[in-house]
Amino acid sequence: MNTNILVIGSGGREHALAWKLAKSAKVDHVYVAPGNSGTALEHKVSNIELTDITQLIQFAREKQILFTLVGPEAPLAEGIVDQFRNSGLKIWGPTKFCAQLESSKVFAKEFMLEHNIPTAKYSVFDNEPQALDYLGLQTLPIVIKADGLAAGKGVLVAQTIIEATDFIKDIFGQNKFGNAGSRVVIEEFLDGIEASFIVMIDENGNILPMASSQDHKRLLDDDKGPNTGGMGAYSPAPIVTDQIHQKVIDHVIRPVIDGMRNKGHAYSGFLYAGLMIDKNNQIKTLEFNCRFGDPETQPIMSRLENDLFDLIENGINGQLDKINAKWVDEFAIGVVLAAEGYPDAPRKNDIILGLDMIKNMPDIHVFHAGAKLDNKQVYTASGRVLCVIGMDKDLQIAQKKVYAAIKLITFKGMQYRTDIANTAKIYI
Ligand code: AMP
Ligand code: GLY
Image (cartoon, protein in one colour):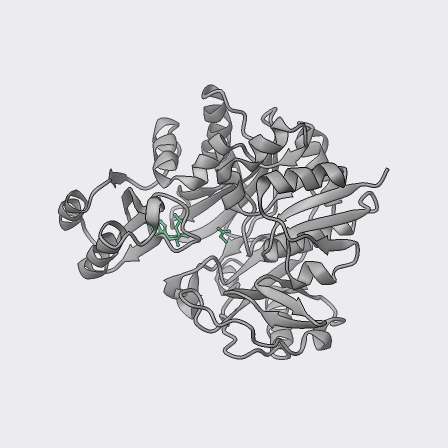
């Protein structure tokens, strides 16, 4: 019987996961729903135009899919894992209950408080007058978060009372985020350096940490401009020392596993803790994501030596204790090429040139994201278009390689940060 795998999603993360799964000698075919131009062009991979969970279940049955891997948060919040499992299908990801750690900031903050997981002090509001009264008593900067999923746009780090007030008014008065904004969290600003801490957790409570990484959330160099889904990421992140790693496992990850179990729900799937690390190496949890990061997946998968199929299969079978993840001992730096107007109103349908020129460049790899294929030509299709990876043992050389490759790619209005991985230089 053929071994067929299904990957859900259409971003750079899903291209990287599908690419890595397709490399496995144990995998015959990877279907990606709905996928992008990158997955369309990949050997042993094809796209299917489905997003509806019932139809995906039917497809998984028809193609005798061995297991399904979920990329983005929306289907997890919708309960795709529960529905696949109820249909007797194997799937990797947390249940709807556990996915609340990402789908509700209020749930996540209450969970952290209840289980002593270090995080910023906060208050929750469900109406504008009380939120504004509270705001008036706070010091700046201050952080305001819409409760629900908002594609990375639901958080404002406000430097002035005016922007904070406007954001709260937009959320409650203008209904900016719909239901996702029916409550807001207002929390203290934390200073420090961010890191993405991603692990696999199986239902027996085994933890398999992924390589450390760091994202760059702001649109512009030097962390200026609005928050985005992530403009670039690199791995490893030297700020995550062995000591910090252990602290996060003990004080953040393990309490999630135990806390969920106490609530009658075993967590299984990827878990991503967004961390703030201060100058005294104290850690606080900014957020949880119940999935792999995007763009963190792209550099992390570029470094993974194991067969990803083995990792996911052991994860689904509750046997992550039987596997050790091995990582290429090099820096992988991923730079996102975004469309003009991203994150607010990205331009679409522009032709992308130069991909052929970098195809065979050593230590360079391109993952597609918001890009589509039309008559063998690749076009932009949404905000984050491509993620270019450069690898080298030496961080600065990896940086030089990735930016040299990017120079060969063009599309109208292309924008990218020129300082991805600069933060790592402080540590080496
Ligand atoms: P979140 O979705 O909660 O991770 O927030 C998105 C981004 O906003 C984070 O990656 C941080 O850059 C920033 N952020 C969130 N919460 C805080 C905080 N309490 N202090 C400082 N920055 C924050
Ligand atoms: N890169 C941040 C995220 O995946 O949410």
